[in-house]
Image 1 (cartoon, rainbow, N blue to C red):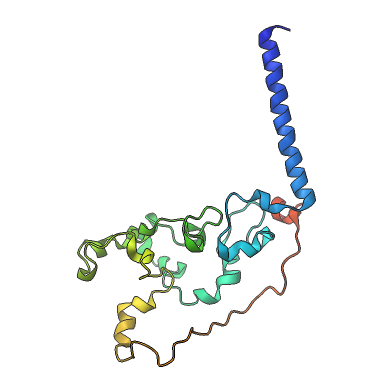
Image 2 (cartoon, rainbow, N blue to C red; image 1 turned 180 degrees about the vertical axis):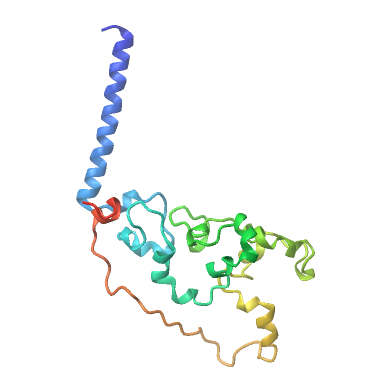
Length: 209
């Protein structure tokens, strides 16, 4: 065996050894039910409880759907100011070419988020549709930083009633502070009575065993 053949043989041995280690690692993960090693990144605080139950959000390797998100977030999205229904209106079709907001994962991508609440888009995302507001359309906002809409705590993509001009106009006669400060009550009805049983076949093979 000449030198080039020997080098090629050694390279094959290294590749096979690495492939074997990866295969052993995957088999061990399935056997020991250690699904967290498959996480591509850190999990946001709100979803950390589901790290051991991938099936709560995922179906095999398919993208997370809106229905999966709504299983937990439906109650708080009842009055979504930027809901999919609004953007299915033909008048706003052009805006969808700038930012596809018909899916939750357009803004929220777990494990790759860079901001709070699982948001992975930069703060200036609002400028995809509202750039004119800081360029003279609204005098009070002229020259504002494009990243300040929600980063400054003024606006919320899903619920902006507190800064809506219509909301403010309708409530001008209300006191600036409630007589007794309190957090509004929220009623969230759980649709799942218990955490799903781990089922790696369902989670990673789309239901096939």
